[in-house]
Image 1 (cartoon, rainbow, N blue to C red):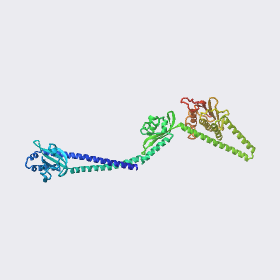
Image 2 (image 1 turned 90 degrees about the horizontal axis):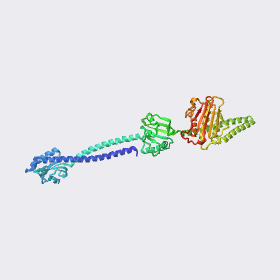
Image 3 (image 1 turned 135 degrees about the vertical axis):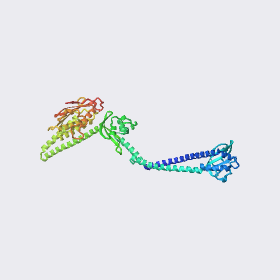
Image 4 (image 1 turned 30 degrees about the vertical axis):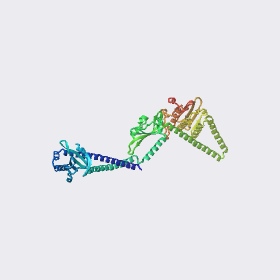
Length: 543
């Protein structure tokens, strides 16, 4: 059964039941009150008649009926009673609406207490039918000489009750119609408020939303217009170091996390993307988006937080893949050129020159590869450098590896990916620098050494150098003097972070128009990435 039908049926049944109860209750109350009112009225009339001197005097005459009957009938018509009957101690009637019953014995059997001097209200059945009676004794010389009985038929009382009951029924019917109309409007309003969804659909969407929120790797926090948290996922609990069993929903966002600027988004209604925020010493990238209702009003805001170091690690991985692809492409292009040269020599019949060309290329390649295998035995670093050499050849850049280089003694706990990030981004930065120098000779040299207690990486180029007013900014994320692509300005910041994680430091010297030298120093004993705050050496800049 649909929600709309359930609401209509439920509200209708409720109104009908309540109307029935109200009608029954009011009927009983009105019937009781009416009987009490009529009984009190009958008793009051009876007592008034019993105290009339002419009535008392009539009882001492030879024919009391002649005096009492006219008086009783006149009063009966005035008060609207069904009957007024007076009788003596023997219950012989002196008055009755039907004159033929004068002189007969009274019917009802409810005069015993009256003859004892008490006025009563009783229900009994007489000659006219069931009636409600008010009875009072007639006194003479302090002796009860007779009784006055003023009565109203029960049928007349029921007629009055029926009139009231019909009014109650009409009122109940009006309430029922109004209630059904209200039920219809309420159900339609609820349907609109919940976008026409059924309860089971809402329950499923809630479970689905909960599962989605918990599966998202980013921290999600949502607030209402009062700045109180409405949604928070498990990742957010972890970032905030709050156990899952601790309820954050309902708390103000400032109590849980300061400087989120989430409440400002609620006020302004403007989204903010990729904004940096510091949470317990870690840098996160935050996206803040306002939540609008169907009328376009802001009803809250939601924020997602992603650890910036995770994005940096992903960028490093992409940089490695890109560098590897560029190396393969460069090698393919280089060897294609050599194969074309060899093909031309063979086609010209210069077989001796072709053999010499092959021998020379093999000797050079084998010599360089043997040098790398001997001095840089780590396959990841050696393979990466070989790819950079091929890329330099394609770019017409002379990349030389210092023959005094040695990178054999690299502690196993030093992250190779971090070393590749450092070497690769420094070399790429040098490539960019020499391609803009306008000189015919474009030189980049790489020197690696593991002698002593430190690993030293040095990259030198004959590029344009670094202006003095930029030297304090080159390691900042996003800083660049180029307009080449959206990723510019990230290389040296990644280098700085990788060096910091390894517990090292970087220095550089530069002369504008002549080039730059970057030197990286990484302690062999501190390559675990667990450097405590305050232990990092300051970077020195030599101009």
